[in-house]
Length: 177
Image: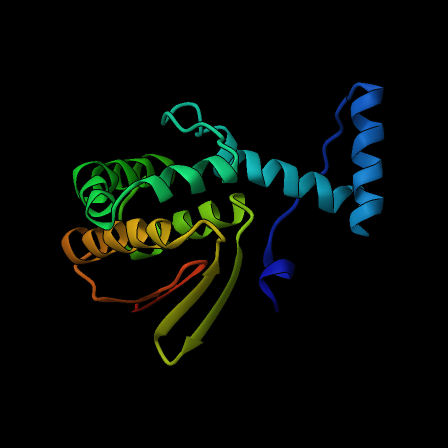
């Protein structure tokens, strides 16, 4: 039995403003999914991410702005930013949103964050080695920042080894669970 089949569901009805429902219907048609599938996706995103975002001080910023800001930093400034602020903030946000800090909860949080950011991601598992290839299009320093933050968290907090390959528009991370 697949995980989809194992999930318990319940029926509930809601009153929605007509203009909201019209937009949701149009989006479900555009995506080729049922209203139920789209509604579950909307609610899941809310409980996994959106309800926490303002509580942890996150704000949406357009990708071109993030890219331009990281381009202005030197590699050393990028690494220092990751060390001085990134590690503790990312660790705290992940713990707050997931309720614990272990390999499974942190990876779940990180994957959700990448999906929310609309990055293309490929996940493979070979024996117990997990590899994530993330296409972000935000430049080398964005990759360097995340490499540094993730290394610090994996090594110091999770006590796990993590391997990286970083490029201008992509990064690859590998670790064993």
